[in-house]
Image (cartoon, rainbow, N blue to C red; front, side, top):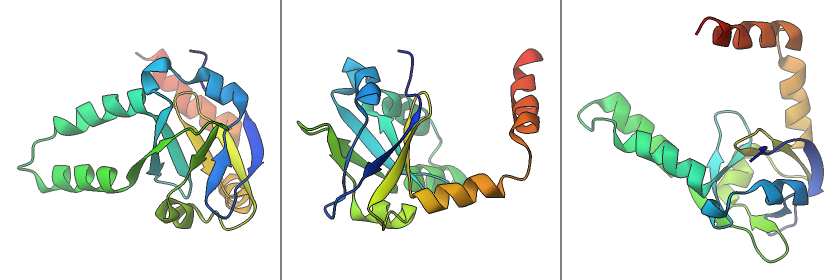
Length: 152
């Protein structure tokens, strides 16, 4: 898998259906069974996690001790923010209303971004504000984040 790459603007209909770009659908592993977990991300967007990738995350969550409150909160929050969505014959997914509200997807357009192992769906104005609010230049951000790999 090359991964989910690129950015596209698509429409969202009044039923919350969004067509995923064909190039992203082609990258979906057969192990995903055309199924994503729509997750209310930490940021104000909806993250689509292929079912097979979600399974890896769920496996980690099940290893958390239920005797620690922080673990229970994380497990509960991760689970309650997640809903299964399946690609239809037209290559669309139907986003749950709670996810639409969380991400502020109130307009007619959304921005779909491939983030290698997941796909993010953003309201264009919220994404622009997020990009504009980035305190560091992208150059310094990449330098800080990616340099960690050199020390390993």
